[in-house]
Length: 317
Image (cartoon, rainbow, N blue to C red; front, side, top):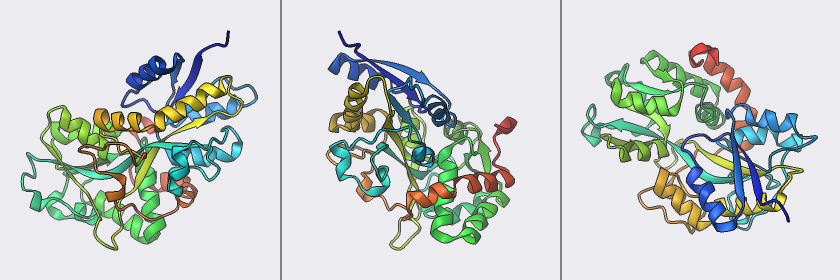
């Protein structure tokens, strides 16, 4: 009898996908064995194990991180039906990794500090205004979305504009925290006025009963747009259970699962047939129009530049 198991390496640890793993098992009879690994380490682990893979599938929180190691041959291309209709930035050129949920960057507003929506920022540059001095916040380089957002601005506007913006924010008293979770919690605890986070953070925090709002930045015609990262799934090359891995990819990209991710966690579906509810659909988001390959090229130098400007996480990790 064939072993009905799926071994998952997960670099995505928040929000917890356990409900989806249980649903997959209940639907297929395949038992997911999930091993959570720090998201900045999980790809390296797959590279170290490529001669004798232990995992069947990777689930993680950054397109850029997996694209950077794609050439190592650790992923098996899989042209899932849903992914064939994707825009190019939502998948690897050879379909070796596929996005299963989009994470656009927005400004989460503390309504107790900024109760009037007419005063909310509409552009990233607004966060350097004197009235927000010492009241804006975002995560350090611990979060790949921070690095990728600045990389996308560098790609779209050039280094002078991108680093100039970062330096204006720092000069305006930008507060940094070790994760998006810590950033959103500090918004009300400290309190801050604005937190740059992923849109799903706003939905989760709102559902916990916090008085927060969401401002979409740089969405005007011809504007910068907002950076949109995505969480991804990939079949491991040489996986012990490749059919189970492909079944899991299909499950994660399905209309039903995408709708559930929007409902539970406020995550933006990448399956156009999914029901988004209160989540803004992907087609209504003006994304910073730069190729993922360029963002990937800039990853290391952006991380270094942010570190030099005070974005190093506590303890240097």
